[in-house]
Image (cartoon, rainbow, N blue to C red):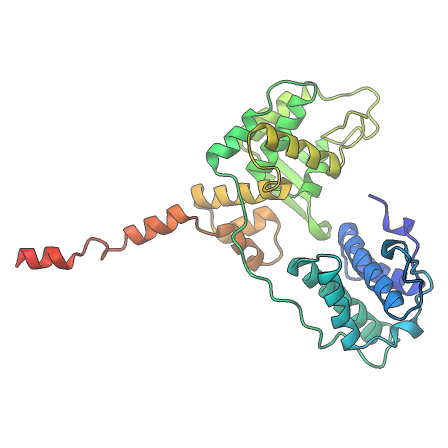
Amino acid sequence: MKNISAYEMPLILKDFLNYLQTIKGKSINTVQVYFYDLRVFFRFLKMDRNLVDKKLDFDKIDICDVDIELIKTVTLSDLYSFMSYVSNNRDNTSYARARKVASLKSFFNYLFNKAKLLNVNPASELESPKILKRLPRYLNVEESKQLLSSVNTGTYSERDYAMLTLFLNCGMRLSELVGININNIKNDTLTVIGKGDKERSIPLNSACLEAIEAYMKVRPVNGVKDKNALFISGRKQRISKESVQKIVKKYIKQAGLDPQRYSTHKLRHTAATLMYKYGKVDIRALQELLGHESIATTEIYTHLDKEQLKDAVDKNPLSGFSRAKEKEAD
């Protein structure tokens, strides 16, 4: 993934992204997402204003000439037209559209309140699409064991097994896993850098310690480019997020599970769900363990499955009451 400075963009957008990173403290990954969203909007704006040939591929529209004068012409109606476009022409889900709304509101708020370049903020009344809450997918205990057991032999089996073990036991993010350095592990505690460069400690259980120890015995030493990185790729450099995603998908398939339904993020959700369900962990402790800024985010990991709901209904003290039996007793 390229660094944000490697992309060509108008100065006004670069200033905004620098503000996000240096003043607001947003992570590089978050800043990159803002850039992608606003690049799509700028391309739409040029296309909508007939500033480019309509035959030109949308993804090849140059945005470098977008300036404040063009942005001053944007109205609330334009913003809703853009939301309609990404929904109908780019198959954006409600989640993707909600993210774009957040990017637009943040950008125009910066231009209006901070940079003082706009007299009117067209995004002030822009509403976010309604997102229907769905229970996130996760692996049950047997499926989790199935996944771990699918890593049997191979050149990188110890490494891959250790990665899956950390995902399923610690509930860390993909970016946190690839960012682990050897010196982040002290006895039975792992320190990771989460969103917003926030540091947190994760206790390691015996399964994690055993998997890491087995991997360290075979981890490459000679010729390694990032000597402190825990997980090393076949090219002897820190493993990338893309590689980890492919590896996880491979083992999900080998375990006989659906690779379309499960991903690295679903493994994080699995860990959180199992800890909450079987560990009786307090939601505040779970929030700290997962590195969530808001408790509301953690609550999606505490959903109850159908088995628990049935158990709750069955344990209602009135569940054994029968009108027929009462009549018989009389």
